Length: 238
Length: 315
Image 1 (cartoon, each protein chain N blue to C red):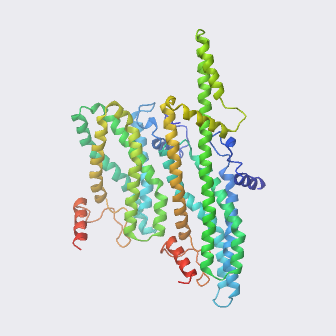
Image 2: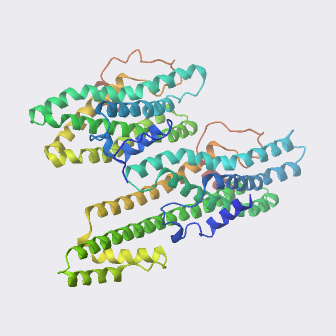
Image 3: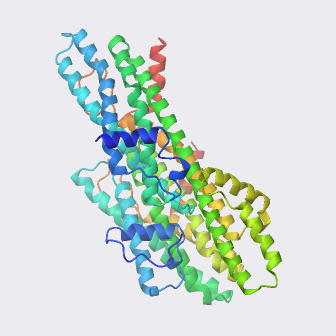
C-alpha cells in the first residue's frame, strides 16, 4: 500500500527514511496536494536531496583515504553533490517554463516541477544506496581513473533507475495532456546539457590523491564539451 | 540460547518458510534472535579455516621466527573475520536492494527484506559451518597452500549457492502466499457485495443464487494450505483474465519485477562477497608471510583464484 499522507508519526530519525521510501514508491504526497502545504512538501524533498546527496558525496570524496587532510575533500564533495543536482535543476527551470507557456500548459507547470523535484530526491536516494558499493570499490581498486569511471557508472545507473520514478510521477500529467510526454523529453535534454557542464565546473568530486584538496580546481573555468572534444582529438591523433 | 538454535533448525527445515507461515507476508524469523547464532557459526568455520596455519607452523617450527605466534593470531583474526565478511557484504548490498525493491513497488517492507536476508544467511552459514570439519581435516593433512585456498573458495561457493537458492524459493512462496491472500480478500468483498445486492433486489434472486454458487465453488477450502489455495487462485486467474481489475494487473507486474530485482541482487551479492573476501584477506594465512590484519590494496579476487588454480596445477 502506498501511503497517501506523509509519515509524521515516525521517530525523528526514521522520518527521512519513510519519506525516501514514499518517494521511491511514487507516493501521492510527494506531488499531489494532500494535507500538507505545498511549501512544506517542497522543503521535505529538498531535505532529501541534501541529506542523501551529501551521503553519497561524502563517500565519493573519500578516494584518497580518510586522513585528516583529506577530510576536507569529503566535506566538499558532500556539499557539492546536492549542489550539482539542484543548480542544474534551477538553471533549467526558466527555459522549461517558457516551453510550457508557449504550449499553453503553464497551468500544469507547478505539478511538473514537483514531479521533477520528487524525482531528484529519489535520484539522490538511489545514489546514496550505492555509497557502500563505491566505498568497497575504493577499498579494492586503487586506480584513480577507474574510480572516475566507476562513479560515472553509478551516476548513470541511478539516473536510469530514476526514470521509473519520473514516469510514475508524470503519469497524471500525461493523462491530462499527452504533450507532457514531449515536454519531458525536452526537459531531459536541457538537464543533461546543463548537468555535464555543471559537473565539470564543480570539479573535483573524487579528489586526485597527488593534487591538494580544493573546493574548485584552479583551471575549472572552461567548457566540458570543449575539454571532451580535446581529449577525443588527442586520443585520435595518438 | 537453545531457542535460537531451534529457530535456525526451523529455518533449515523450511518450517519457518512454509506457506501457512507466510500468510502475513512476513517471515517469523527475528533478525536479533538469529544474529548471535550466525556469528557463532561463522566463528566456528573461521576456526576450521585457521587450522591449516597452526599445523603448518608447528610442523615447520624454527624455519621462521614467530611463525607459531603468527598462526595463532591468524586463527583469532579469521574467527572474527568470517562473520564480519558476511555482515559487511550485507551492509554493502542491502541499501541498493531495498531501494530497487521499493522502486519497483514491491509489497515487501524494509523489515521483511531484512528478515528474509537474515534467514538466507542462516542457511548459508549453517551449510558453511557444516563443511568446517572437512576443511579442518584437510588443513591438518595437506601442505599445499593453494589447495587450501581453493577448497575454502569451493566451500563458500557451495554455501552461497544453497543460501541464495533458499532466498529465491522463499521469495516465490511469499509471492504465492500474498496472491492467495489478495484473492481471499477479493472473494470476501465480492461475496459481501453479492449479499447486499440480494437483499436489495429480490426479483433477480435466481441469477444471484447462481452467481454465489459459482463463487462458493471457487472459494478455497479454509483448511487447505495457502499454496494449494494459491494454485486454485492462479487457475482461476487463468480463466478469467478479461475480468482482472487494472489494479490487480499492476500488482502482478510489480511482483514479477521484484523477483527480477532479487535475481539480479543474488548475482551482485555473490560478486560483492567475493571482492569483500579479498579486501578482508588474509583468511587462511600464507605460511611464508608474517601475520597482518589486512594486506595491501592490490589485484582482485578473481585474478587471485585463477593464480591459485595455476599454481596448484603446477604452471
